[in-house]
Length: 318
Length: 272
Ligand SMILES: Nc1nc2c(ncn2[C@@H]2O[C@H](COP(=O)(O)OP(=O)(O)OP(=O)(O)O)[C@@H](O)[C@H]2O)c(=O)[nH]1
Ligand SMILES: Nc1nc2c(ncn2[C@@H]2O[C@H](COP(=O)(O)OP(=O)(O)O)[C@@H](O)[C@H]2O)c(=O)[nH]1
Ligand SMILES: [Mg+2]
Image 1 (cartoon, each protein chain N blue to C red):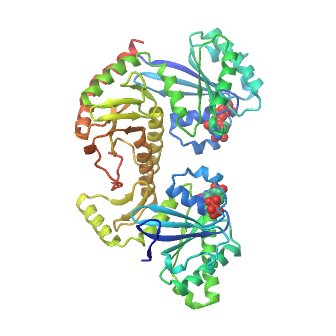
Image 2 (cartoon, chains in turn yellow, blue; image 1 turned 135 degrees about the vertical axis):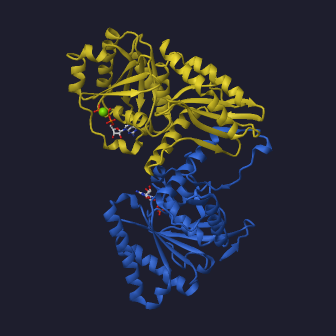
Image 3 (cartoon, each protein chain N blue to C red; image 1 turned 120 degrees about the vertical axis):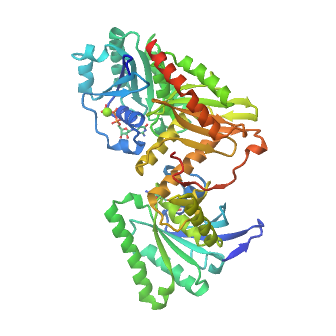
């Protein structure tokens, strides 16, 4: 492609053992959660370039969290680490026994970021939520409040996550969303496409990570009315879908089969998942029983070019 | 087949006995297969104190008796002749005499009360061991049971015993239980023949007929079952079952509802 590449630097920070490398390997390398137990501590910074949408390249900086490394990020390496950052993701192990030290390092990193990249988006992940006893919400709320206090007037987003469920996909879909500036235009076109297919909903995923890029519905309303009745949509459906497809892709790779597309005809709806553009997959959910799968697949083929254009536009104009 | 009507519900249910020592994994097996319990959650199951009878509706109605470890032929409360199958669960790391004595006790009783009963041994928690140790322990358990039976009387050799390696953490449990189920399905030869015809005409390399909810396969064509393919089918069904509720219809039109309980994903089902 001739359009210039757009690089976004993403900092992944947090105490050693908090789960940074684990989530990276789940989201970007399609590894199952069970394999993360084998990961060793990250030494210094591990840089990775991940081709995301079209010409958007994520430059991931996985910063090993042992004290010696942290101290050097905050002193000698300070400008290298914190300049030109698009997003900083700070990971907190919810079960850590060193809350005080955790927050202290976080405040220092925040100060460094504000000095060198004042416009960077900030995401705080309260991680390993699976280890918290039910009910988990109060624990999360408390943590969130502490983090808000520690952040002063910085604009932050806090998510509870675990590599063992869909919460990780929700957080990361939100993170990448901030990196795709014109996602709302994609959304509008998806809505048009959904109407053309008589679909209840259409969702666009990034191809390798299966993170949600855009959806046809402007709000994530959980009930919608279609020609064939009232449909109840699970509020976690996007991240659950990402998780399910990723897990299934992994199953396919185990028998050296490549995952290509899916057609599910379930009890009360049809779902078609197919390649939309070079970097995306589209999923169409249809409740109308008169709509044939073949028609949906044809529509996808016809929409491809338009979406290729939109995708590169949305990045160039950014 | 030994099918008995119980008074509480009118369908005839095929009875299966689930036996084994304490913490062998009997309740876990029942719950993971038929109650969708995530394998990790089996850790929190409490010890079964008395016999619990579970009604399960797969392709044939089953009644599974989850028995506490101290159950004996006498305390069972029903003659062995009422059961079609005994599944005996042994923890793969448990190489001692106790489970084997218990198993032999039931084999001997079956020999006189119900020689047609299917005897299935689930050598369980297999994922805990490395491949070599797994095979070695499996072989030792098999050998010890045979030796004990032979010591008692050569006539017990007629009792057909089937050994399976199982674990709730992978699909080996589903595969083993499917094989147990096959012996109970009278129409199996016809189903298998239909699948053979299907494969021949559609040039499918493999076909399984699955019960979608339990992810047990009811029949397959004559070509050998390759575990990797079987696992992929189970993964696919797991995804299908989880996917359905995400976009549920409250008032779907009746015409929408074209799929019922079972479907036939032929391989490869999900890849285009
Ligand atoms: N229970 C639970 N464990 C997790 C989760 N995420 C990661 N872990 C475990 O946490 C341990 C440490 O994970 P890493 O990803 O290596 O941690 P890190 O933040 O990269 O650590 P450094 O590289 O030393 O900074 C691993 O054993 C993971 O399996 C989670 O969501 N829940
Ligand atoms: N590693 C492993 N543990 C298992 C497996 N199946 C069951 N368990 C564990 O074994 C323990 C006893 O299981 P339970 O079903 O209560 O045994 P029961 O007394 O025979 O009913 C539980 O802690 C389960 O988590 C398995 O396949 N692998
Ligand atoms: Mg690391």
